[in-house]
Image (cartoon, rainbow over all chains, first blue to last red; front, side, top):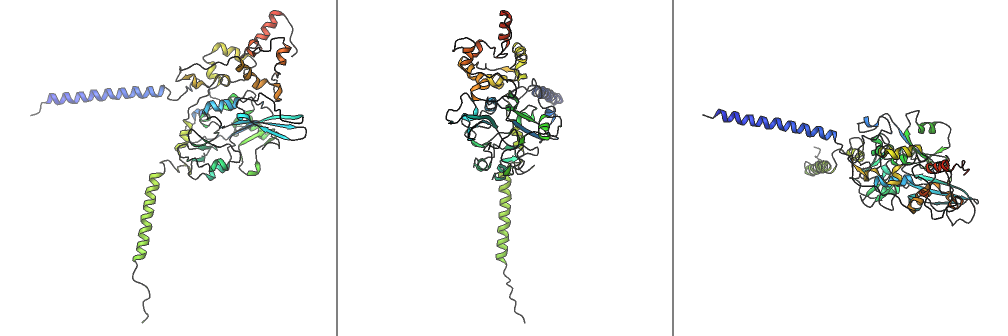
Length: 271
Length: 182
C-alpha cells in the first residue's frame, strides 16, 4: 500500500509552488504595466493633439489630418530639418524634409538652392546673382501625403501603402528597395535609405501623432510656419486656413495626386 | 451507322487537369508560406506594418518634457521673447539625454562661434527672410559696431540665449538709460 502522507506532501508542495508562481507572475505583469517599455517616458508630456492616446484601434477614427505650410511665415532657419534628423537619425545626404530658398531678381529670373537641405539654415546670401534681388522666400518641402499616391500604386511588393486614416507609410520589413516609388513620386520626397536599405520618406511623424504629439518639425517651428491639424475640427487652425479666404494651393495640382499638404502663399515660381 | 469520331482516350485532359490542380495547390501553399500573416487584412499590405511604424521610438519631446526638470530655465524661457523656440533645436533630442526616466548623458552645449551661427539662422538680415512677426534682424558685424563692442564678441556675451532681452533690460535699469530705438 502507498504511503498516503508522502502523496499528500507532494500535492501540498505543488500547490505552494503553483500559488507562488501565480503571485510572481502577477507582480511581474503589473510592474510591466507601470514601467514604460518605450524609449522615452510619455507620461510627463502633455498631449498636443487631445484625445489621441485614447485611440487604440488600427486606424485613427473621426479625424482627417492635414498639413499646412505657410511660406509667408517661413524664415529658413532650418529648425524643422534639425528636428527631423534628430527624430529619425536620417543618414547624411538624405532628407525626409528640407527647406528650399527661392530668390527672384528684378529680371524675373528665379534661383533655387537648398545647401544640405537647409539643415544648417541659410547663413550666406547668394553671390552669383547678376541683378538686384527683388524677393527671397523659403519653401519647406515634405511628404505631400497624397489622397491618390502614385508611390503606392507602383510598389510591386505591397511595401508602401495608404492607411484608412490617409497616411502613406512604408513597411520597412517588406520593401526590397527597387526604387520604383522613388521615381514615381512627383514631389521627390522619397529616397533609398543607405542604412536600412529600404525606401524612406517623411511620415508626418505617424508614431508621434498616434501618441498625441505633433510632428517633430511642427513642434519646433519658431514662427508657426508649419501647421498640423484635424480638418474635421472646425475650430482647428488648418480648417480655418483651408475654409476661409486665404491664398492656398498645393504643389503640382496637375499631377492629380491630390496632396493633403497645402501651402499658404504659394507662388507660381515654386515647383 | 454513324462512326464515333469522339476519342475515348481522355488521359491528356486528365493530365492537364491534374497538373493545374497540383500547380494551384503548390501555389496556394507557397503563397501561404511566403506572405506575412497579416498581409491583406486591410489592403494590399502587411497590417502589422502600421504597428511597427507606431512603435518607432520618439526621440524629440516637447518643450514641456525639458522644462519639467529645469525650473530655472523654464521661468526665463517662458518669460522671454524666445518662448516659441524649441529647446531641442539648440540642445539636441531629449532621447539622447533621458531614457526611461533616467539621465543617460548630458547634451552638448553650443559654445563660441557655434552660438553665433545658431543665432544667425533666424536673425540674419543679409539673407532677406521676411518674418511675419517682429523678429529682430541684424547684420554682422555692423550690429557689434553699432553697439560699440569688439567685433569678436559672441551673441551670448550680451544676450541670455533663453531670454535675449533679459540682461539688456536689466543693464538699462541699472544704468538708467531709456529704451533704445533699435
